[in-house]
Length: 196
Image (cartoon, rainbow, N blue to C red; front, side, top):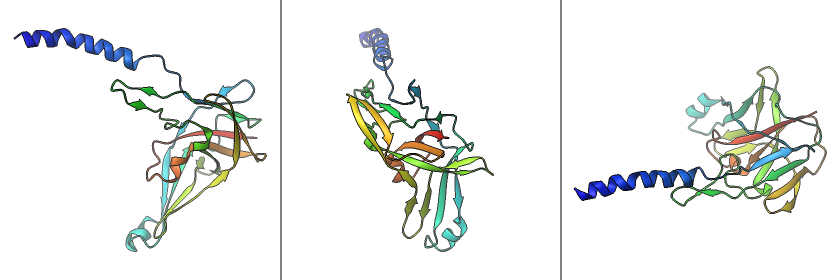
């Protein structure tokens, strides 16, 4: 009977300790743009357009099937006049079990080298922005228009990021490189922006 009293005494202590571990101070990693350093908020995929599924099934994968992940709306809410960006990487926190808990939007990245900058294909009729095309079949491949960029580390975890050439007007987005090799795109966040 004394074991139950001990358990009832320790349970509130464990719960209070867990709350302090999980709800400690947390600074998020983020991407900023412009001289006033406005935050570039991430966007989730709205869906995936699939083409040629019937032919792919009938040919047992010999005929290619294509998947086109897309964002809703033909234009981003972030209008960038000067494409100069600031990446801020914060140290990942530990959860209540002592394990590293990377942020979802940055996927545990520690430098801009783990990101790619994509030029998005706009479909004005359907009001969508396509990220890239994945062609599945005998030889799976990704068709994407990547834009090269450089970066300079200002201080620990703080980077200035800039495209290596002038960006043409259109839709763009930063995304973690893992999106190019992942079989599922639903949990990736795209930091999308428009250049006028």
